[in-house]
Image 1 (tube, rainbow, N blue to C red):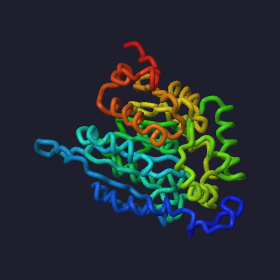
Image 2: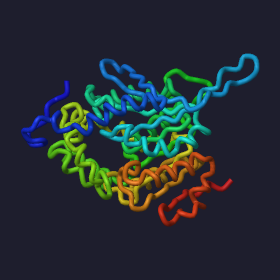
Image 3: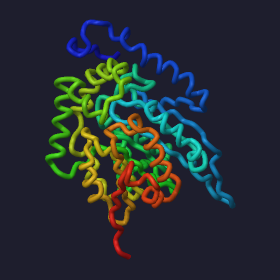
Image 4: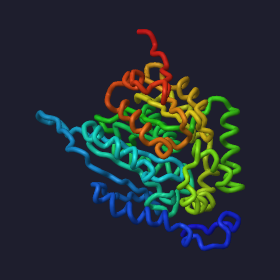
Length: 352
């Protein structure tokens, strides 16, 4: 059962009576997503749950020849951010659908329990260890070729790729899989570089635990959309729950991804809102400096965008992702809107 909120967050009115928009959205999504080809698979993580919205886009190829094993389907797994729902990415995913049908066999959207998604009424993970174990076990079985992670999701996706590179994942080794080939990380947390940047980030979440979501609210968007007010009660409920506060308190140094960055063998694209104040683009220096020299790493700074590019500028986000997934990294640099709507920072490859 979810923990009631402290009075200071919502006042005396009944919470359920104040979230008809979000309840309606969940009700609609659970009926429309199956019609769009998604099926909800719920994994058990002890007594907790993890949701996976799965959609087949095309038939996976098979290897020919005697004794050849079936080739793993090409999967893209989307991991949303802290407190977020995969529903916030449906606009971007919809715009990418024609391209994904040519490049990807299956699309998987992760739905965390207790967040503001379809499992919002389920118990949330109350520790980072539990969340990582549950998600990483799911990723072991899915063997994604591409991970698209936002904020906390980017942190988790990068950590999983680092553990794969270090030989710690998948737990059961698979001869055809050694980790994701591509990481698409939007405004990721988990690596800071400068200790002062980490201290400022930690202070922000300390105040979130003590003072509530209103302290964090100015940092979610560069310019808050008008409709966010309708979803605020659910966000306040999430941020004020004992499970979520316990989760934030459980984060330790060993959970950070910084020390694992040198082990990542994936192609890495960093998408960052230029106006992000929650995980500022200055964090990108830690990624660019710590990823292996032989790894392709590019940073795309989205102009006029804050911490939530999928909601603030879904068209721009989908365009940049389509150029990346289309197979030519140079397309992001050469596009006529490059320099106007985004800037690309490319780390120089080592001389051969």
